[in-house]
Length: 315
Image (tube, rainbow, N blue to C red; front, side):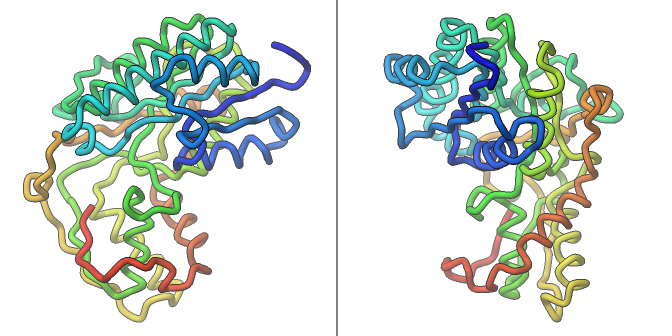
């Protein structure tokens, strides 16, 4: 470590995870005096090795949190070269920089490294064998393998994130806004995982960075329980109705993954078991509780805050 105050560099700082993590690091009592710096595509192209090394050399990080990724499954499937460039070449450059600067590396991965065909009781644990079904899952697994070449590394797998500001990438935000506009939604009812609130994920990452500085390996970090997007929609509708935000809930129609026309394959049930995190002193709240808290956060948002035309939503 270069000084008394750890220096933390976060890639993907403008994404859902990066935004939540930067806020948590800057306010949590354990890290409030750490030196924290976020970078994004606006700063440099992560696939350009020289640019990555120059930026890292200038800041001199003790800890690198690598959250930058192309995380839209179908975009990766449609343009695998771009997926490889961002998720594999970019991670290679970050890993190389971490090794050069002797930095601790925390790499964000995904439940999509599992095939979801026959998930274990209680969910996938850290030592279960990955078997990705999509280009996205393959690139995240490749990133895990590269991250493991850093002596001081931590791989964090998470799933089905919500808590952002863009409804094109945040299904729960989109659901809340459609309910407030009285628009119907078609929601997948035959795919399951752990809907995870970025605020809860960020709090867990702060715990791992501040309270388990010597931990090496893989940890699953997701809100507790398992759900389909249709079940999430029901909780959203019930929460808004109970709060008096909507007079009557808009229709939530259950649909199948097969009927959505996705390009990339999705695991049927990629629920993660986050009990190891609990054993490390940070149990995660239940997914439904997390959804309700996020809805409460959004209640002050004007019903017409989004400017997209009315449409039938899907998730």
